[in-house]
Image (tube, rainbow, N blue to C red; front, side):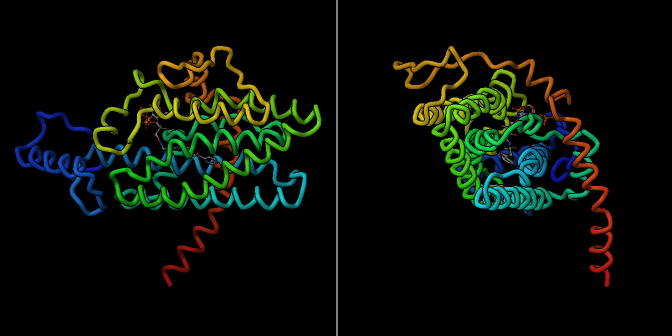
Amino acid sequence: MYTQSLNGTPTDSDLSQDDREALVRFQARIDRDEKIEPNDWMPAAYRKTLVRQISQHAHSEVIGMQPEGAWLSRAPTLKRKGVLMAKIQDEAGHGLYLYSAAETLGVARSDLVDQLLSGKAKYSSIFNYPTLNWADLGAVGWLVDGAAIMNQIPLCRCSYGPYARAMIRVCKEESFHQRQGYELISDMANGTPEQHQMAQDALDRWWWPALMMFGPSDKDSAHSSKSMQWKIKRFTNDELRQKFIDATVPQGDRIGLKLPDPDLKWNASEGHYDYGEIDWEEFKRVLNGDGPCNVERMEIRTAAHENGAWVREAAAAHAEK
Ligand code: BYC
């Protein structure tokens, strides 16, 4: 049945007259900026898109703990260690809110996790890059969390209520993450010449992967037009990427770091920065499992899942009592 089914994207000719009318009423609610709630009627394709996006977002938060976790035992001061620990715990929390938001759409979290572990579901490309030195933690906070906020603030106005509400708290925490990263990399950039060089090197390696977080260019984005019509996405991938670049260039200038793009220049007539070509071949390779850390990330995640089996069994046994 079309109306509430989770699978398949029917074509217009598959729809009954009732379904067509329901679709018109649904789009009218979206156009009036009403929130869609879990028990409301929604087209199967809207539900499917949300499950896909929210679950991939949740997986990204969970996998995203790994590049930072690698530095917990090597943080240079107690203060930095405490901040890093809090940030990583926040990411775990974001994953949990997001899995819960996805579950309101009628999918089981265990199925979503299986999709991640079997390689069927994606997670953000950015987490397949390594954190090679301490300055990378600054670059991750400044750029990766900075890009995340740019992408996620509009999701607070997403048409699906549970996702939009989860994003409000996530964004508050992401804002703290971005600021701690910028403070960390500012300290490095203003430190000794060697520390400054480490900060520049981290920026050089993280800049382009951070731009890829926003997804393929609009002309290649499979889902954007439908997601914009349904107000799941409020801006296209390229619009958000441009906003991020425009916000980040002056931040780099302020701390004396140079963004690694020779084509970056202010375009006064359009009021934004023009930028160079993104290496989309690299993006595709990373999405297809061939990034620097894809294998390692999945091995660690799979081992954590297997080692946690007894906790899930104990929790289920306790719940049955
Ligand atoms: N990496 O049609 P498109 C965080 C996939 S967590 C991997 O434009 P859409 C953080 C896309 O899924 C950051 N895959 O898709 C955590 C689709 O594949 P499928 C995660 C990507 O959904 C810890 C295909 O390419 N943020 O910030 O309209 C520590 C075609 O793309 C990527 C979110 O998940 C990518 N970069 O737009 C620190 C935010 N880009 O599903 C920080 C929520 C695209 O057809 N998600 N793909 O197989 C979104 O806003 C949207 O899903 C995207 C993509 C903008 C990412």
